[in-house]
Image (tube, rainbow, N blue to C red; front, top):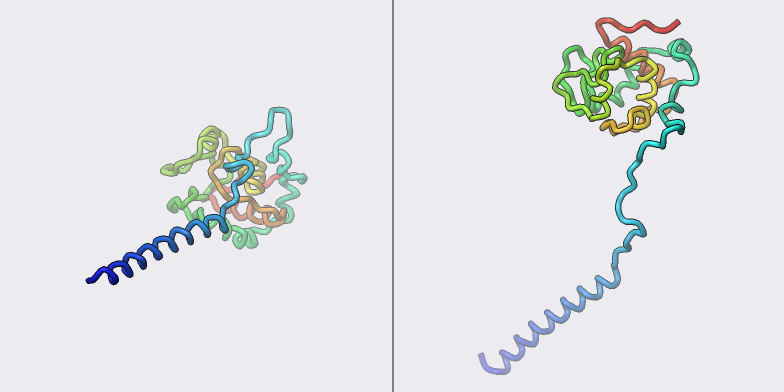
Length: 180
């Protein structure tokens, strides 16, 4: 290779390097990401003592007798499909992303063996699920039990909640009595 050919090759390498570096600088300037004013994510915290919580607000305006008066367990089975993504409901069924729900109404919080419950749920392990607590929980799990690991947002429709409650109540060897 003579001197002229060598100069051509070196010039081509220099031009490619310069074009690559220039293109990189240009695209960095054109597509500069915007930094948020406040970095990070906002985490919801429990309200100060004395303020009404969302769980209290989620408590039914009606009594459980009134809720169950319009409830239809057959419709509740259809509503349950939203829960079936994470929970099973057959007797002796395996846990999924959430615990098995067979006999959940009337059973103690966090009582399914082999499931890793959140600290908030374990703290209530000595207390049974009442109809009122279950109703508030399916309305808004995070408000009803702050610190729960359940990511579900809740069921907004009052009728769907009533139907689901009727269905969950029936899925037990000893269903709890419906209030009169």
